[in-house]
Amino acid sequence: MSLASEFQPGAHARRLRLDTLTGLRWLAVAGQSAAILITYFWLGFELPVTLAFALVAASAWLNIGLRLRYPVNHRLEDGPASLLLGYDILQLSGLLYLTGGLQNPFALLFLAPVMIAAVSLSAKRIAALLALMVAAATFLAFFHLPLPWFAGRTLETPLLLVAGVWLALVLGASFVSIYASRVSTEARLLGDALSATELVLAREQHLTQLDGIAAAVAHELGTPLATVTVVVKELQKQLAKDSPLKEDIDLLVQETQRCRTILGKLTSLGDEQDGMWGSQTISHLIEEVVEPVRNFGVSIEISASGETPEPLCRRNPGIQYGLGNLIENAVDFAKSKVTIHSEWSPTRVKISIRDDGPGFAVDVLGQLGEPYVSTRRSADRRAKSAEAPGLGLGLFVAKTLLERSGAVMTMTNAPGPATGAWIDIVWPRAEFERNTR
Image (cartoon, rainbow, N blue to C red; front, top):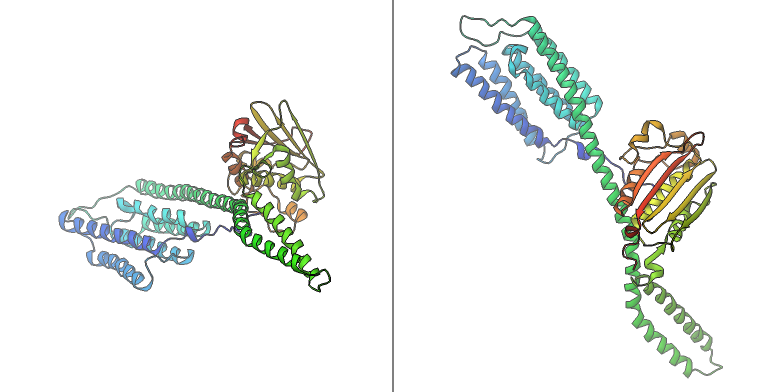
């Protein structure tokens, strides 16, 4: 029941759109131009206006060149995106060099490229851009033109204050990059995992819908088959007993009757009032999901107990897939035995799954059920199966599907000295038996 063959989360959705970067750069061009004009013409401070506008113009021309070269919806690979963000850091560094270095309050804008990188690039690229920003800030702390100020006066900033600004930039950029990267990664993984869950539901729903399709086909084929049956029987009556075609006609009669029987079975699959196909007992549910893993070299013991008649449930692809995934995991990790016990009362239904394997790893026990938290060790997986490693979505998908059916799932390790994983799934009985009466 692995999703690996059908769903491979990629980084494409995380890539930056070129239009996003160029839009932000146009905003920076407008802001930088306004700051230079206000400083020079309104405040009357002296600064190298020509060089400053040359740096601003470089960003504008870069945007124009990118727009002419690439379509609006183009998404950047990590390499080109890193180069463009690196350029933004260096361009800002050039402007700050001309206008006072770290004494310039706009040094805070160093955080912008780092934050954009943190939510869209890999950890290696983020670290490289962060290192570039720190190097640029360190250079500007010691080398820069004077801060634009009133004519004939120089604003002296204490070295300790400059050091404080440098430290604040470095710590702020580091914190922002780590925080933004973590939040972005968790949001992306959750989105991918939910997409995988929807894929599972769609696949299982498709299988369920085949019953209805089969019933519809059976109804459509019923009329022409009845006609064929009548014609064949008429031919059978008209043939002489010694006719060389009698044997063939008898065979046709036999096969048409067989077709009618098959179509009758297909028709019953789509009958929602047919309790045999529309609902099942909890014992039948467990047997159905256990059957595919019975020959995996692990003993599977099934038991049941209850105070009332055995509960029924509607055939639910989500429940079947969720339970099947949990039981398959238990078989994968078990040393020799998996125990499945169902019990019920007038108010609740419970299924317990136990195995005698190593149990859940302590470092992931508190995160079980979260997307992309895998309990599989590489060595264990290779020993159990030649399949590719899972995506870490199994428990998340199973938990999501079972909770959608109204269940509450708990996962713990067996109390010592025993070993193994314990999983309990509990439904309110009314929820479990919904739509079965």
